[in-house]
Image (cartoon, rainbow, N blue to C red; front, side, top):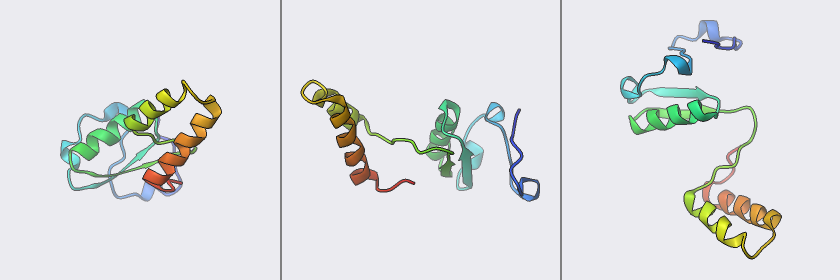
Length: 103
């Protein structure tokens, strides 16, 4: 387990666990949970927590693009007719309209 030392973490009254120790979201139902990182493990854990009724938040270092399957399908269809850089810009704009500013 490699949990980075975040200032103030030693005074945090809640549980702090590494993804390698995570088993299930069952015991977190109704609790506020913060997942640090958006790698495969972080995103899978966040999804599992949310499906088990935890109030789940994710914090990440760098911006990411959030997409829906429908937007990906639209992008694949548009890529047959438009330049990829234009398709990318259209999908980012559509995601902003759907999800708002996620920064």
